Length: 285
Image 1 (cartoon, rainbow, N blue to C red):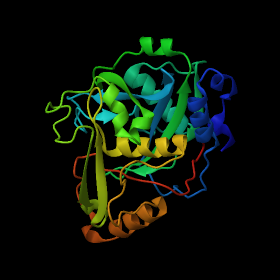
Image 2: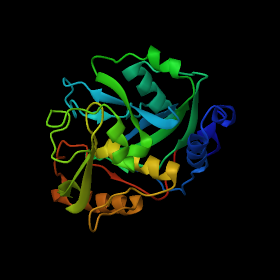
Image 3: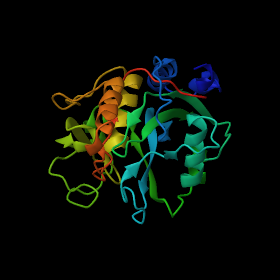
Image 4: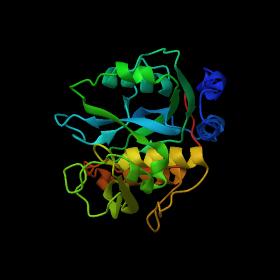
């Protein structure tokens, strides 16, 4: 894991508020034990780009183009499938961020902090989140959405994934609009059964933002990052009763389902993730 933090964050931390500095230090020191992902051929990576605004950490997000076949109009972290030429998950995350929003590669103002535990999407892709710190907000002015993939670029306070009430001070998407059609003011959930994983239970979260809702896989990844950074749990019940919250357990269920002839269950088309804890091996990272 030594090259996960190939570029030191020590000088960058001095530019942050004490609260944000502590969050980054916790993320930087975050380690997971190893689990073998060599049998997983469908791999992807996303970039959690953090930066401080008004003393608080924010994360860069996008609204996907409505012309895309997969998850049109949904909120996403920059990222995509691992290319055969990518050396590791870090390279995948930065390459995709460059392609989607024009984030400069090999930028002196961006420091890789860590790689988080893996998540499994409903399309059975193992997704590895790469956390990075941006220390020069002028870089954000250079970003430009790739119109083929991205409708808009926005950000969201990381801590609001633990406490949605933080968003009350923001200029939120209009309630009742396409960007927030839910009855709740800030946070909506529902429990569902995942047929593609042998009918296990899963709680879907949706968070109101200044743009499209933060939900599904993106919400799951950011809740995990926020819990590590702020060293506390969500202010709401995160998991459904009986939900598997161990990544090794998820993989075992997936393997058991796929070993059966009737396992070819179509995905629902929603970014329903099964995230979580445990150990993960990052080949080449």
